[in-house]
Length: 433
Image (cartoon, rainbow, N blue to C red; front, side, top):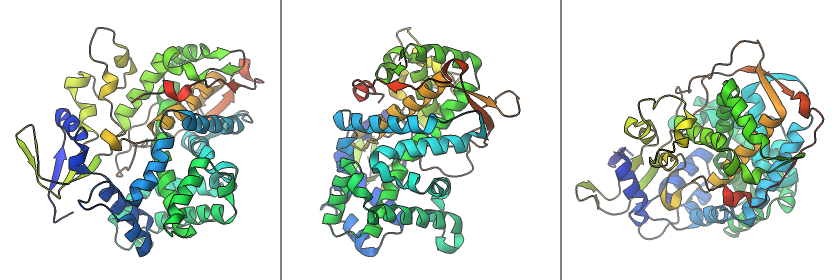
């Protein structure tokens, strides 16, 4: 990067223009180089991933791998199938809970990681076969930036290096044990695409780690933040609880109606995303480009599109820009809908394809827990929302700076209820972005 120009884009107006001109900016070259470094791919695999078109743009094996999942994660029958499988696993995870004292982050991590991967990897999901992989993923997710930043990470970043290798071994075991035969159709298609290029199982397992990191690095911390903000505020909790009761039909939860019947819960989702997202969108300029006839961006430069500045602009959000206030999205005074100003998943054709699945999974987890469980601080003290952890660079959503010990128990009126879900056309109603 030292020998290339770097442009940092912070103005919302210019960001919109960039996202509308995808032919002038490439995403995959940067994504490819980052993936190679993060996963320590073999030279032959790295060379394969770097096969791009003549102008360094957005085609090649990386786009092919990416495209398989992008199409499957758009709203429609395929995504509905993922969500249905995830909800079945959610029932398995939550059903046996009796009063338990635990770290909130540890509990959410186990719950969200297993639910977030169950539908993709199927019955032999590596995180269920080997529960120690959950802790390995936590270490990897927390410190994976050191694999980029530190020289010789085997010795200078031993902890995260070992966590990565443990995860790769776990996913390789999934393939050697025939797990792909029972996995989702979309993972099977991706596997066929990858192996058709001669990629061996060990390298396929490493590419799976990139996939699982993309699926979890946002949904897991967002779920945790949702619980912090909802359960720490008795008024907000009661209002959201009453909203979610409107989803009940006997023992069935109509998740499909969450956007229509739970506006405050959905507003909380947007406000959490606004406050904790921070990773920038990265592009490479493919040609000399002028923005608004005044900003010249030279070819072969790096473009860093801020993920923080637009979310902290008082001209957009008001004087309480630094405060948690989900009700700002419920303003009926005729002002522009502020949800459109929340962009945690990038923009343009390279917007994160997993955003619809993330919304559906997080809403399902939060609705189920709010309806059926109580969460209290273990020491009985008031619940204080932790500060955002800014000590480490993040490749996704920021995590809390501190953890909290809690007691989780069933609500007395739902102690023996076995709930079901009514999805309907859930993902078509989850167009949150």
